[in-house]
Image (tube, rainbow, N blue to C red; front, side, top):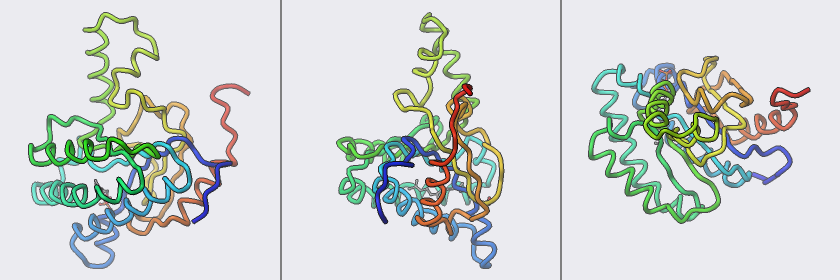
Length: 230
Ligand code: FPP
């Protein structure tokens, strides 16, 4: 893994998709795909920090994922607690700060407690901010921001509005990657993605490697970002 700065986006966001299909293809329970997914989260986080990415946002659980059935949802919540707890020393060593975005009030108390602890334990990390979107839905985020800005009586402009989003203080993503061949944003960072470059890969999330990630970063560097100009 080599570090290069010429093509490195400041903020990468990833829709990690395909855990279930990865497991089904191997006649394994879907939960095995999620466990593999955690391993890839660790690899890609480490690679991001090494490559010089400053913000990495991962979509782990959407406001729509509650439809998956109680067993899978419970499994995921327990997996989040287990993986976040055991991940803290590694994040500290890599100087990565953990931050969670989404509607935390809708999550069970045992999970919220573990997330708060992890945020607190890693708060000194300066190399990269790892944002994990949990119980996140962009439409809800936007509607909440509308309500808050109205209550605040502040002028409605882009700067003020952004400060009421969950991502306040975090620059918009330069690059959004989605794995597993689906080509949509699925209620992820709809406001923040106005000028993001989008990359879709057929690879299922548990099969996503640092090599493929690096090749996407290189392609990103070759794109001509115009932000509406010419
Ligand atoms: C999408 O695959 C994946 C998820 C909904 C869960 C993603 C969560 C992780 C990878 C773990 C996150 C790790 C930490 C440390 C918080 P899918 O189940 O929708 O796959 P499918 O579309 O093939 O069914």
